[in-house]
Length: 500
Image (cartoon, rainbow, N blue to C red; front, side, top):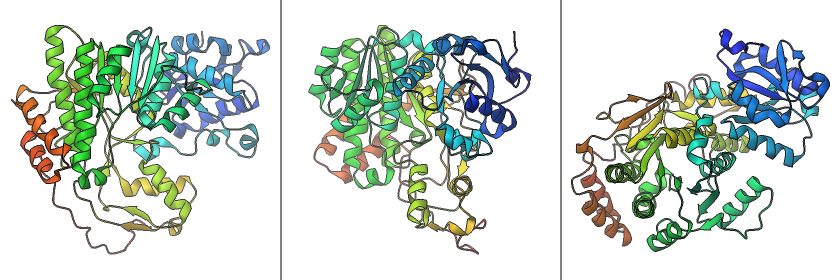
């Protein structure tokens, strides 16, 4: 049997190319000679029986498209690339579902004509080299073992219409849940999501749930009626500057909303509950970070009760900045480049941790699988990336010359850190069964003694939009939390350093 070449020292993600035609064959060759793409071909799939058992540049044609899931598992594939131009949309959806069922990410080669116009076909695979943007190799996170906690179960995803929520729904659907309930307060997002997943959106079944997580009686009714067994909680307000101006809204959605869901989950015997948090919850300095840290504490406090009662597993995951999500840095940069205006950066030295949307969703699914209760999981995202460096790399990859890009420094906004951290200074980084995922478990002292009482006062202040009192109560619940002084932008010898 052919031994995949990644085992011979390559560091790229193990890749199956779907299509052994001209585009697929050219792609295999280009991936081999262009390691910067981070993909190492280990096999090709094609429905032409004459190609079975042949090789393309030493890469074997392993089988047919119908065998995708089985072959992806057998050959430990991490990425599937669809390289059949003009493939019908229903077949693309079927192949994407089969790939997700094996815990494999999917990428697409856009069109054969565009491929022919380029010297390197692989450059059509994606418009950006993600590895250069995030400063590290992309991590394949999700495994086929996730099926064990999803298959045959009723799964609820909150915030389903958002970037992370919708990708979660697509991948969860591929693992065979008995029911997939997609909850959001935006009906248009739900309509779009159902159309993407099923190819039609009749809006006539129970899978779409319009609800606001702040509405406690409504959430309790949904859990009683639908009886979800696995819950992925992605609904949240996330824009830091807006929440600094409107802290009561952060509390209503990010804290009270999470509390409502956890309470309903405990009451109805949910097996697994996964909260999506943020690295800004580690030693928070913003209302966003403080609200998500309280959401983590609610999950962790109830996880202990659930564990003692043997009823369910409650856990959380922290994300860095997710490339490709709505309102993310890349979408903002792309729009600023298109408009010809200056690129706005808060500070020359500001750094952030970045992850791809595939890594983010994989982390959520793996956390749901590995959790024993009360942990906060974090992906090892390597070293933080300077935003200025990311702007430079982005500009080069969209073929903009240095003199075409103007950077304007705006200064850090209230609540923003110059540098983020993945863990609090009081948290211990613990290894997990996955080599690139870490966990931390809250010390007993980390949870306020009267968390419930403190939250009651916080909710009462938020209900009447008493923003000053809300900030005061956040500080009482989270000792050490305070908004930092805004760091001034240093005087620069040139207004646009590093050649910009």
